[in-house]
Every structure is written in structure tokens, then in C-alpha cells.
Length: 461
Image (cartoon, rainbow, N blue to C red; front, side, top):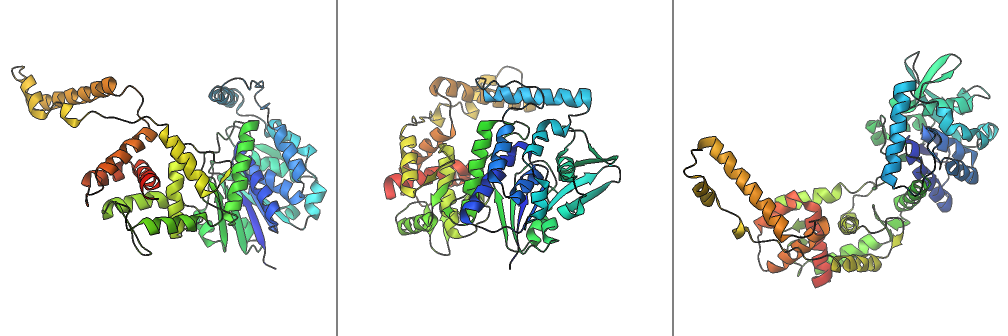
């Protein structure tokens, strides 16, 4: 039997994402034999080994109201204000008390955790903490922990300073395992793991990338989206993160396509075929099985392809780059990442959003004062040399500012920039080389890629 390990990172409030990953694993029936975790990953890991999804949900619901710093529930207040209040209280606790007791936040876990079930589970459970007094990392599986002390070592794994004071066990001080290994892949491998599903919350802590590379059959799950502040415990944010984790698990195991968004299976392949079929007539793009050139410019093409590659996590095929290209536009038009899409529905929503964007009519460059004009304006002032040059640039910058203030009555944003670039591309479809667009690709790759995709949707699909 091949042993599969689930490795869960620390990240405090971001840990609801791991609950969504677990939901996806249950739905797909993927067997787990080893679970290791650090900090909130240790809490979630214990609940998973206990195999009680309902208790895990109840525990996370109990964290909805942040009682750690005696902050009342004011859902009517704007989210940024509630986050600010939380972190102000956190800072005060650190300065006046040296941090809080981790049990004030996670103490309710004792009502949902059954140590006996964990010890009798067919799944192995391991966690990471750090002994401050002995200055050593402690990697324990449940059988290494004395009877009745499992909850204490889970709390110790969560005691991240300076937010929390060290957790004391038998006179020894322990702190969060994130200071040693926030994504304990090696601990799972030491137990004989042959496949690893690692969930990275992109939070504070040490992640040993060499261990990730050394892990056999690694599936890395990480959100494309921001999972929010680590110490803001909010019910709506929990629901959002859990849904993101659920969809990302299904994407990682090919139930859906995509990275930032969830598309029905085979969408990436379909989109690639469509774009390659249109490649012969689509301007600014040359696509074959071995060639992918944007804007007839290798430098610009490398910059745009690198931008798309950075969006990929588990996938490296050419078809995944095409879907990342579409997702880039969806992100700029703020499509909802919490649902699944067909390619047709996704593109339709994109075009609807695009039509609602006002055109960006920038004044011509001819309206700006030239260098000769500025020199004439400075003649007779007695200013010369470097001082004159600085003043010339100051006049130039002031002119640009005045031009935009008077001529562009609305805020220039990424969507309106895309619309401007689409119109620019249309005007130059007969030109083979466009150095101007190549430079723009280097400066704003997301917007240029967005414009190329919209142009394809509107004129060449």
C-alpha cells in the first residue's frame, strides 16, 4: 500500500483554507495515512486524524467571534476597521503583557478533540514545536507524547510569539513550530510517506523548500488569492477561505482546470485548441506546438510568458499557460473565485464587464511642452546647467499632471487601461513590429495580456 501524507502549514486564521482542502479530500475519497502539521495545521491535523468533520466545523465556528482581545462583535463596521481594531489590541497585549495565552483563543478545542480517538486512529499524527529552554526543535508523533498531554503539545505548537507567550509543559517553555518548520514535509517522510499533499498557507514561518523538492509525488496546494490577515478571526473570511481550499484541492486532482479560478475539466485543452486555430489570423501572436511568440518580439514574449508561468503552481503544460492568460483577465475584472465556470460563461462575463468600462481617451503627446519650449521659457532667468535641467523636468511633470487632471475626469485603472490598449492594438493590426507595445509588455504585462485576450474574444473568435 502506498502511504499518502497530508502536510498542513501554520497560518492562524488562514487555517480555514485547510478545512476546505479536507472537504475536497473527503469528496474525492482520497485516502490519507499520515497527517503532520504545525500551529493551526496541528489543530486541523488532529481533527482530521480524529475523522470528525462536523466537530472541526463547529470548532471553526466557535472562533468566529474574536474573544482573544475582548473585541466585541460589530459586523456592521467596515472590515478594514475591524482588522485595525484587532491588531491594535494585539499590539497592546504584546507591549503590556508580553503576549497573550494561546488557550484564550484555542482553549475551546478541548470540547472538540478526543485524544483517545486520535491515538487509536489508523492515521499517524505528527506535530512540530520548539523547546525554548533546551533550544531544540521537537517533532513528535502522537505515540511520542505522554498520555493526556496531546492537547498541551498542540497548544505549544500554536504559541507564536510575540502574539502569544511561550506555552509551559513540565516547567519547559515551548513556542510555535513555525520557527523550525512551518510545513513539516520531512516529518511525514520520516514516517514512510510515499506521496505528499502539502498545504501552504503562505504565512509567517520557515518552509524548507529543499524538502518540498525532495518529496516524492508532491502535490502542493497554495491559494492564488490572499487568505487575509493571520490574526483576524472572522466568520465570513473563514467561509471564503474554506471554499478556496475546497476548489484548489479539486483543481490539484484534475476535477477542475485552472489556478485562480475553477473551470470544468478539459477547459485548458479546449482554449489552447481555439487559440492555436486562430493563431494564423490573430495579429501580434504566433502560436504553434513549439512556438509561442507575442507581439513579434522575443524580449516582450519572454516577459509575458514569464508573467504567466509565475501564476502556475502544480501545472506546467502549454495548455495551462493559455488558461492562466484567461484567468489574468478575469482577475482584473474581479470575477468571483468562489464558483466554477464553463469557458463560455467566463468569457461572456468578461465581455460584459469590458463593455461597461468607459473609454480612456488620453490627450495626444503633442499637447505636452517639448524640451525646446521649456528651454525658451527658462531663457533670461539666470538658471543654467544642472539646475536648469531639474527645473525643465519639474515643468514637464507638472504639465503631465495638469493634462491628466483636466482631460481625464475619472480615475485611470487597469480595466480602462486594457480598453485603451485594445483600441491601440486595433489601430495597428497591419504592422508587423510594434516597439511601443513591446515596451508596454515589459512595463505592464498583465494589462497587455488582458488587451490581447479581449481583442481575440471580440474580433477573432
